[in-house]
Each structure stands twice: as C-alpha cells, then as structure tokens.
Length: 155
Image (cartoon, rainbow, N blue to C red):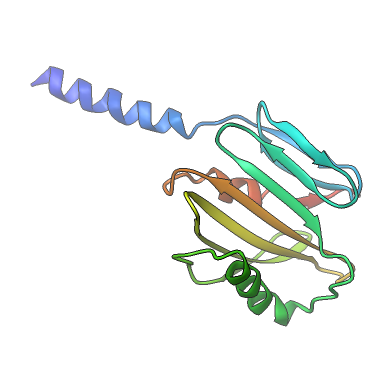
C-alpha cells in the first residue's frame, strides 16, 4: 500500500515539474516591452516589425499594432477577427484583464495541432498597442498565461 501511495506522489511531482519551466526577463528593445520568457529561447526575429522567440515547447510572437489606433472598446471584436482569420478553432470566450501599464483581451483555442493564446495589449495612455500570440502543445500548461501577465513597458 505504501508503494502505491509513494508512486502516486512521485507521479504527481513529475507532472508538476513538467510545468516548472524557468522564466527569465526579456526586453524587446525596439519598443521597450519587457516580459518573462522561457529559459533557453532562440530569437528568430527582433526588429521593429516584430519579435519572435521560440523554444521546443513555446513559440511567442509580439507585434506592434502600428497605425491600427484601436480603442479599448474595439479590442474584443478585433481579437475575434484575427482569430477567425487565422482559423483558430475551439475558441474560448474573450476575457478582459488589466496589467499595471496595459488593458488587455485574450482568448485561447486550437491552432492546427497546437494550442494557442492570442492577446491584444493596449497601453493605458492609448499611445500604442501590441498583438501577442503564444503557441504551445499542452492545454493544461499555465505558463503561457504567466508569460502574458508579465508584460510591462520599460520606463
């Protein structure tokens, strides 16, 4: 009986460590946007057009909403539109959230064989906005949400 209980505890701990990925600070220098990224990432693009970081588990894209001039009230519909354009299936409802420097909306869904988190972030002073997408494989993974909620602007 002790062996069974010990085995169950070890399995639970193994599953927990699967999601205990180390995060490290990263700053997109072009716009002074900082967030926590998974350790061991590869930078695929770091330009004024966009930022792409990847690991074997995550694919993170950040783009400036240049010239879009979204209003906060439009973010939900615009996020639904981009998810529809990208053919995201099994979409969650769009949820609003607030960070110290941003208003945000997000949804999750399936992007072909991956899970995806889509988000728009609008600065509270309404001077700029960003599109963020995070692709990952496990629907129980909470790290994409942690990454998203870590976004800040450098002062």
